[in-house]
Length: 260
Image 1 (spheres, rainbow, N blue to C red):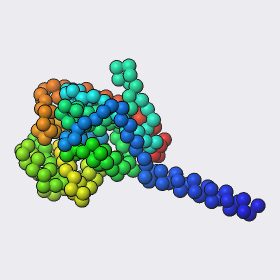
Image 2 (cartoon, helix red, strand yellow):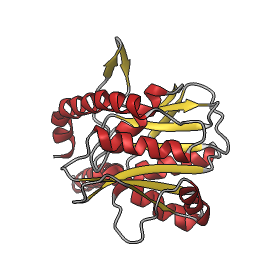
Image 3 (spheres, helix red, strand yellow):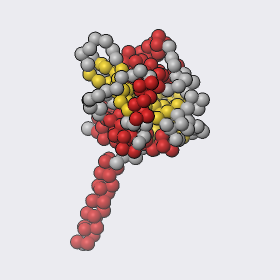
């Protein structure tokens, strides 16, 4: 009898450790459905974290340029939901590619939980390496009381910093960059991977579509062939912002149930 109890306790402990390991090191699956050829190109990070500017910027670029959905990202720790667009179901986190422009975008309508940031960044770095991307471009917002809007950048390597200088984007000398962009910069610096992070100032709590349009225009200076019209980007970004906010609201009860 005692042996049976000990075996049950060991079994319960083992199962609990598996659950803890899954939570601490969540697996993110990348499922590609079409051929991808972006060797020497760019991977743009479209995950929202400090507000919605990065997601708005990349979604606006997808809407105004010729991008094709080529895959999805999924995880047991992503909220379970489907986004319906034009009558079709969609994963909330998708991969869009323009093989002609050599540009890929990780596009997400959901803000990843803090516990997923490191794994999201790791997935991005591994995917960029697999497809031989030359640059990873991320973005975020910084709080500022200045009336005029501005964009500054950070590069993980000399080559990345030169890319910013060539685009006439000032370099940030001192500051703190949290979340996925910060992890990408640290890993890029350590492994000599070209990572660029664009930072847009924001006076309000959470950047609006104007900040997203700013980042989109800055990305178009860095990524060849992605030049876009500011007026059309502003119009598209405003629509995108409302769609992302609606998705976040719908997903909130699911997030509360999953993460507490």
